[in-house]
Amino acid sequence: NAGVTQTPKFQVLKTGQSMTLQCAQDMNHEYMSWYRQDPGMGLRLIHYSVGAGITDQGEVPNGYNVSRSTTEDFPLRLLSAAPSQTSVYFCASSPTGTQPYEQYFGPGTRLTVT
Amino acid sequence: RKEVEQDPGPFNVPEGATVAFNCTYSNSASQSFFWYRQDCRKEPKLLMSVYSSGNEDGRFTAQLNRASQYISLLIRDSKLSDSATYLCVVNPMGGGGFKTIFGAGTRLFVKA
Image (cartoon, rainbow over all chains, first blue to last red):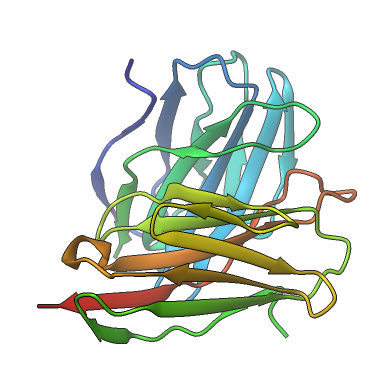
């Protein structure tokens, strides 16, 4: 059981480039989310999805797009990379019910924008 | 004021010590509370959920005080392997039901 997988593990981009961070889970979880983690700021929610075809913005959505065409995959697209997007990105999934349950995190993608 | 605040530490304690972390939250309607553990350069992992009645898991005890809007984590008989960052997590369960909010974390170093 792979859990939550993320690719790539590391990425260096130049300002203005675009790219997609991949996230996949094999636990049939309905809820998936993307966070970024910066020193001293904790994890901040970028976008989340409560099921295929449904996405919504989190706390820091600007500069990022998401889509959810399947239950398993939740890619994060950086439209035009900026140095302020240098961060560690975590994808997470969770089963849904009457309350959010434990979130399972992927290993993270370390992104540097020069 | 941040929605979830934690003392960043670091807390430096000897093996065998008892250490306690507090976390305050601003949204009085918050419903779900958790402690996550994050090792250096790794992903966060759930340590324990926090219930109104308090709960214990081995050497770890979590408490919730709704009146004062804080949660706590107590670690007894600290081990070297407890060295990590501990993240306080709150879910408002309001209109943004799934918008989980993470504290910035408290770093713990346990030394021999």
